Amino acid sequence: MPATTRPTRPSAPALLVLEDGRTFTGDAYGATGETFGEAVFNTGMTGYQETLTDPSYHRQVVVMTAPHIGNTGVNDEDPESSRIWVAGYVVRDPARVPSNHRSQRSLDDELVSQGIVGISGVDTRALTRHLRERGAMRVGISTTETDPSALLARVRASGEMSGAELSSEVSTDETYVVPAVGTKRFTVAALDLGIKTMTPYRMAERGIEVHVLPATSTLDDILAVGEPGSGGPDGLFYSNGPGDPAATTQQVEVLQGALERRLPYFGICFGNQLFGRALGFGTYKLKYGHRGINQPVMDRTTGKVEVTAHNHGFAVDAPLEGSTTTPYGVATVSHVCLNDDVVEGLELRDAESEALLSFSVQYHPEAAAGPHDAAYLFDRFVDLMSARGSEPRSARTSTTGGN
Image (cartoon, rainbow, N blue to C red):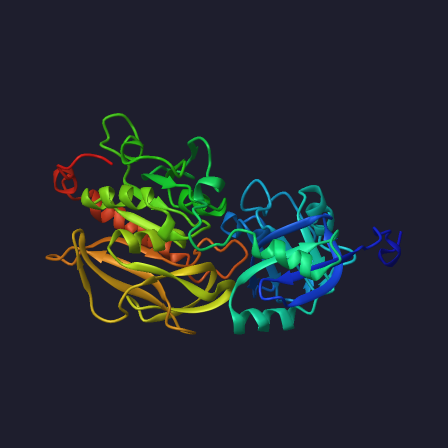
C-alpha cells in the first residue's frame, strides 16, 4: 500500500518532567510506561541506531537535537551492542515510514520490542537550550502519569549519575575473542567497560587479535592473555563506558599495575578518564557534556584539527600547558576540544628517552556513524606496540606483584 496510508498505532499522551520542574507534553513514542534517567542531548544528525545501542548511554534519557528521527529505520548490522541501552528517548518529529534499502523494521517498533519508553512531539530545541543553560539533570517520562508534580517527586527520588559505578552493569560476563583480519600481528587485552562492537573490529582490521575481558578482570587476568609462554599481551585497551570515573577504583589500580610494567596502553572515552586518574589527575562532571559527531578537537602532537564523535559527561582535570611527572613517566595533554578547552587526550612518555609509552583520547575514533578523522589513532596504537615490541621484555616488566 502507499506509504502515506501505512497503518500506525494510535498515539497516547506522554509527559516529560525535568528535575527542576520544567515540564513538556507530547505523544508516546516507543513503549508505554514510565522511565527515569539523566537528561542529555545528542547533536548528531545521523547514526541514531549507534547512539541507542551505545552502552555509554546506560541510565540516560537522550534528547535528539535533529528534528527528524527514524527516517532510515533499523537494521541488524549497525548496532554497537546486543541491545538498546538508553533509559528513554526524546524526539521532535519521528518518521511515519522508514525509507532505506537496508531498513528491516521501524525505529518505533524496535523501541517497543525492547521496552524503551520515549516521547515525541516535544520542542527539542527549547529542551536542549534549557539543558545547556541549567545543565544535565534527572528526568522522567511517563505515558501513565498525568500529574506533573507526582512525576516530579519520583524524578527527584531517582538515582544520580555522579557517584554511580555502572561499567560492571554493561560489561561482558565472559571473555571472548575477536580474531585478527588477515595476518595476526599483535594480541591485545581489551577491558570491556561498555565497549562498542566497532572498536575491536577496527583493531582486528589492523591485524590485532582482541581478547575482550569483563570489567572486573584483574591484572593477572590481563597478563594471562596471549599464547602460553608469550609473557602476556602486546597491549592493553580500556573502552568507553557509563558512570562516574571517580566511583571506579578497581580498574584504575589494575591500570596502574599495567603502567608499572610498561605495557602499551590505549584508552578511549571512559578509558581516557581512568587513565587520567591512574596518572594522578582528578575528574569532574561537565555541565552538559559532549554528545554528537561534530566536535572539533586539535591533536597537539600533529597540529591537525579533526571533527570527532563524542559521548561523555565527565572529563579529566589536567593542566593544558606543561607536563606532569608521574610514577610511570611524564604526562601531557595531547588533545583539546576547540569549543571549550576540555581535555580530550593524554600522553605518557618515558622521562629520559621521551618515547611514547601510553596514550588515550576522550572521544570515539571507531565512529561507526562517522566522522572518520580520528581513525589514525588505531594506527598509532599499532606503531606503539611495534616500537615497544623491539624492547627487551625485561625492560618492560616490573618486579612488583599483580593487582
